[in-house]
Image (cartoon, rainbow over all chains, first blue to last red; front, side, top):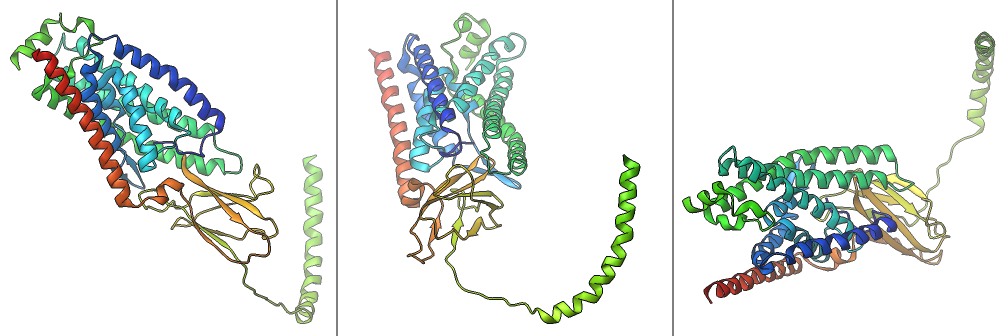
Length: 233
Length: 169
């Protein structure tokens, strides 16, 4: 899933950094505009550690093997904190474990961070859903989709990037079929990550529901169903 | 046009038989006159072993070799075997850095193999991989990963303690 050094042409790497910079700035600004920006740091730090470790957990999907990414999970639980969290996690992965690379850090951060922000938007949908269904169902349902959307969009970006930058001298058809094979292997991974996100969200809802509070949703406090849920727990 | 082509094909077929007949007479004589010889000598070759960081070999991955003279166009292309190995013989007349790139589905690496001219006839075994992943042992990696995790957990504890203090005061 991580694009290592030497795979992408220099222009793409430079463009990756050029786009990742304003996205990081935008996320930090969103964080800074909260009443207390340090509130989310403990869970962001813990989930950065989880993200850092997750890429070392390999799941065999014959004939290949894939590893957990958990960007959808980070997006769902952390919101805009997910982007800097993923950026820091990727930096440590590149330097210490050797996953990804420093030249491709910008591209990798965009590839996993932007779908994480999208996953956050998908998870926001729970506020709409909870008007019709109970809180537990809407949280679990949206968490599943957030987890899936995160990894699915990230892998689509990955495969588009790789497909369009096959260097001359390589047999395009062989490389293409290898890429398609790896794409298919990410479908079970997406379902797995969706399920994992649901499990974590439901667990947090039971144990510490305030961790699922999301400061970017203004109508949250005013929503009667949510307050009832808090009181009940 | 098609009719004309058919006609040519027919003539070709008709001519084939007499020609084959001539060959049949000629071959035994030629075979006796020219024996085959096979010579052998040892030359230095390079073996490249490509594997994922999990240790799993990069089997049947595409390999391109770039000579120092022309780093843009591949000098040789091929694929690794089931064990992720690829053996090739560089032109010993071309000294410099030979780049070998192994790639499969967007995963892979590039290794630069320095080769001295004809003077050095040593074969070298080069393990592909980035410098950082090769220069550290598994234990070192685990310790570094552990310290990163501890740093992150520490950050979490620091900020949660601070926010609790704020809540109390």
